[in-house]
Picture 1: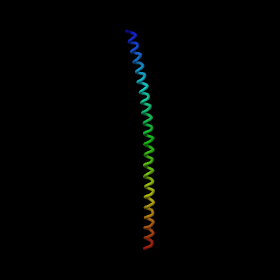
Picture 2: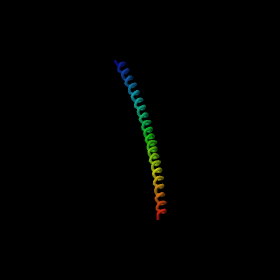
Picture 3: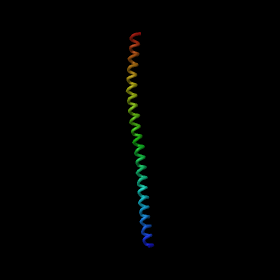
Picture 4: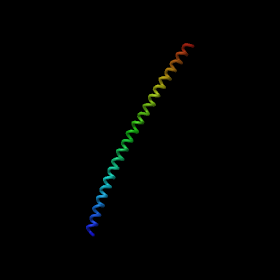
Length: 78
C-alpha cells in the first residue's frame, strides 16, 4: 500500500514537472510572439508613414508647379 502511494506521488511529481516545463515553453513562445508583433507593427507603421510622405512630396511638387504657373501668368497679364 505504501509503495503504491509512493509510486503515485512520483508520477504526480513527474506530471507537475512536465506541466511546469510546458508552462515555461508557453511563456517563452508568448514573449517571442509579442516581440515579433511589436517589431512587425513598427515596420508596417514605418511603411505607412513613408507612403504618406511620398504622396505628400508628390502633391507638394504639383502645388508648387501650379503656383509657379499662376505667378508666371499673373506677370504676363499685368
